[in-house]
Length: 282
Image (cartoon, rainbow, N blue to C red):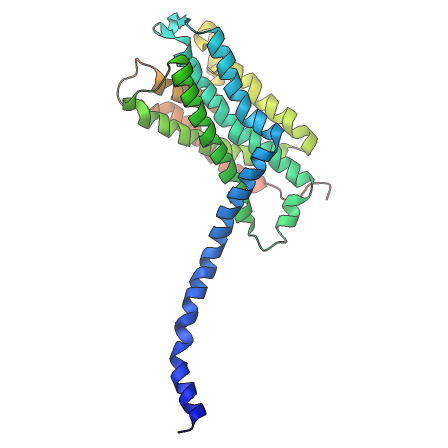
């Protein structure tokens, strides 16, 4: 046996060592997605206008309205403090701005600039890029929820009871899924980047004023509350307020409101098929 033959026989069993590389390659898209989340979130905080309207504005509204109404009580809701109603209400508004408004406006802008089109020509899988956008908005929402809960507790003495934490958590998750799906889906009706902010504001603001966020619905006409109940903004506000309400017994899970959020989330997911990566002008 020659030295060359012996060398080949000795090295032959080393072939299966390529398996770890294949496993690493299969995990690579997920690593890319996680890295994209970090990049998108840093980009979110560097964009001052996005950070202000999606994160800072709800906290500012909480401080202003909470300070002006501190000490007031709502007779229509068992004489509970106004802040017990308003903190979860503004929490719902914050979730909407951090997910729905944030995603709709930023994706419309990126589509108009041709960024989404160019992403599809890069090694980064489109789903990983979208995971980065969604992950960033989810992180912003989690941060906003934490700040809102802390401000409500330490500034106004309003906090959720441990017995209803599960109801609050379910409401937060349902709201995040619902408004994330709707935020991506609504870009199909946004013609260009200039129209993104006005269209999202027109969808959110009017319903926010009649959906148990800024004002108690019992003080207004009944038909307004019935119309608002069809939409997910009121369902989210009611679900969170139910968990905060000291009169609530049990786990604080608002089943009917979660069903409404689930149906709107399903509608948003179905409508994702109309999402466009390219502008109509391209």
